[in-house]
Amino acid sequence: MFNLLPKDTVFYDLFENMAQRVVSSARHLHQLARSFPKIDGEIQLIRKEEHEADNLAHTALDRLDRTFITPFDREDIHELVGNLDDIVDQIDALAKRVPLFHVTSIEAEFLKQTDVLLAATVAVAEAVHLLRKSRKLSELRVKLIEIHSHESIGDDNHHAAMSKLFAGAMAPLDVIKWKELYDYIEEAIDDCEDVGNILERIVLKNG
Image (cartoon, rainbow, N blue to C red; front, side):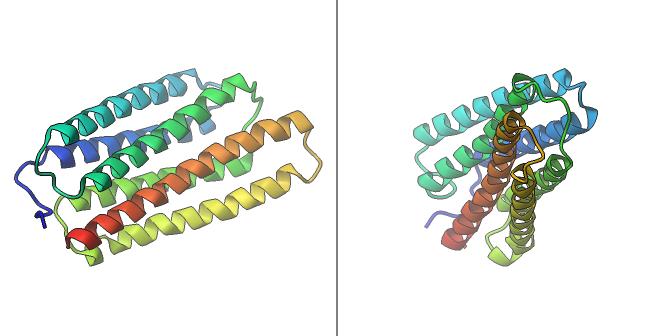
């Protein structure tokens, strides 16, 4: 079994940089929802974060292909990188749809979900940082529980938002638009929990 703390720290640098792109994307989405309708700047910043996350993911996977000894299992590295990138992709896809759908106002339930997503991404980044120096699940458990808690709150918010959408007060076209936007942000929150599950598996296998 390889040591969880190898001398080569490049993979950990890449993981942490990707996690920071995740947080930054969520923060820009959070700001977009609160500065609406002045959203163009935040959309461009999210797009920039998505490009940077893609570049980091390509760098990590290229290094994985060329490195003989890795800090932990290759499939776990591949999955961790992919899931971190997925969060940013979901946020980018959501942000692009706000002008595409000609959204005229931001729903209160969506504002709540941007709060949850931002908090979840911060917890993810903190857990990823702990991976560099910890091989004990007990040292990550607080952050993993926090990520799961945010995902549960996100589920509750999503259900409440869907109930409101289908109550009949909103125009059918707006229902279609908002259902897709809510689905994207819920998927981003779910992806945060997926990252937490991957981190838990990595520590359990290498502790």
